[in-house]
Length: 417
Image: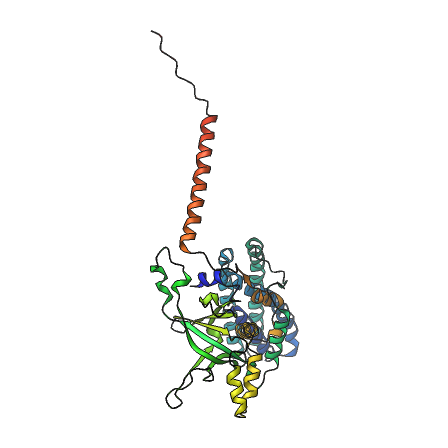
């Protein structure tokens, strides 16, 4: 399913899980600070210097490790070999934290001198391990072919949308991040795992059926706490469809941004085989706690699609008119996409987007741009593959003929009678 959508979409965004080493290193530094508060000022200077040196090295290594894990999650197989080293380093940080914490808890006047010496030894050991890991990590990055120069691909990123989304995140209205988006919602009609049973002559996209879940919906991003966000989708009955006011209740979908694994964007509804809808579509892949996948597609409404409904509301002098008008103006999917990206990034890094290194921002904001046309059918792929095989066979045959020509084969001598 992912591969089909990647080929059919204009942009694909994948989310990786934040490296746990960032948290482990933070705890290690805090543990040293706690120990410093418990020892005499005369003994603090030496450990203070070591702590500053350790913090500097950890900060540098942490960013490098996060970048390696992000790139490895995007499919770089060269970097996968370094993950064991990263896990070992994280284990060492956890052990360091536990050891220093235990020393701090058992610190007393009787064992103060010995405890300080133990802490110094643990810090020296950790510094040595980090120094040993740095050349290996640099070698892995050098051979991986991944570009970490921090340059943003301006052709795939809208600076205006990026700044607009960042402004909404840093200046939220109550608990709502950004405007109220007016969108149509689709979901997959049946399990896409049936793709493996399709006929060779059937287009892959034709085997994915989408249904209109909400003809009209109000979509918002809500803040749940420090660096925790939800995508909330509320069905809007003001959609020109018949609804029984007594029996029907508007539907609701709540998606924790943590569960969003990837997004696919296309400038045309053809990605969903919706020929009558040419407006942009954003498909979100959601990974549930039980391991199952859910696919939700959000599409922009056509311009003026519900103008008649709005006019009727104005005749009734309903106060909701101003909200509906605002929603129509702020229904841009590109803004919602950037809001999801940046909010999700804050969740992953557990800090403000303003404090995230440029290299990490660059990785998350760099679009993987693909062919804007629809993917080839299986029959077309087989024809291309057959053409490739025939070409290889022809080249092999030509090569064999040339070898035979170059062989010095002498005729056998005739036996004399």
